[in-house]
Image (cartoon, rainbow, N blue to C red; front, top):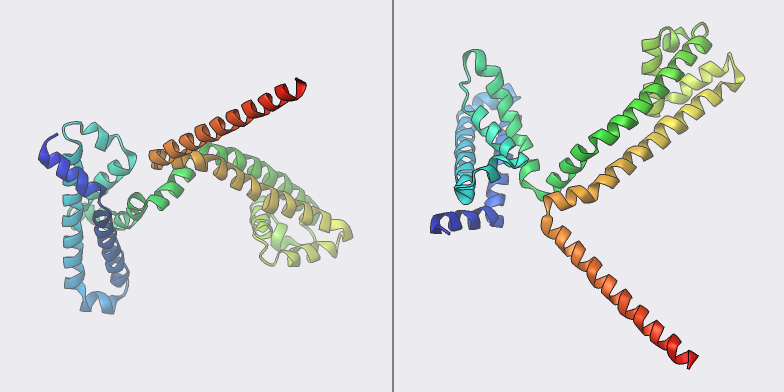
Length: 269
């Protein structure tokens, strides 16, 4: 391997290198926060711009080092979703901050803060888990939408005349159900409905149990189900360790079974 490529690979794997990149991201985030204050932005404007330039230079050097570390197989860099996201953010950062690209350039600065998720392994694990969970979460959300629709239509028919503030239309009914699901003063809505229908508490309690309890548990189940796959994707070494542990436990169980068989054979004699 080329000494330059080998050196760049060691730099990319170095913990201090990742710490430096995280520091640059945090500096960018601090500058974005200071810019929201007109007084601080005017007082430290030049320092903020200088910090942006230093951070941008660090990100450019980072991309160059990572590309060199995988040369000439650049597909390993651009085929990695995390590295590709970093590269896109870097390219957008060079857009001029005047004219038609001014808004895009400002938004690109915000994207730099999201790079924390691509640098820190634990955050990368969480994001990977959420992405893998999207198909399953989509099914849960579809079921929740059907539940919302049914209860909203029923609520409008049952409580529209008595409580038009919360049930005057289907849209308002959906907002009311969202309030009930978040458990934000939902009992006020229930007690108002119970003035008309004493048994209206069944409507609200059943909805809370289905939407706020069961659905949330389904979401948690979907996320946990995809957590292990995401962990293997982010840290293949962890997957190898897990497989090695399973093999060792299987070997121990096999040896124990052989010993038991030997003991049983001796007892028969």
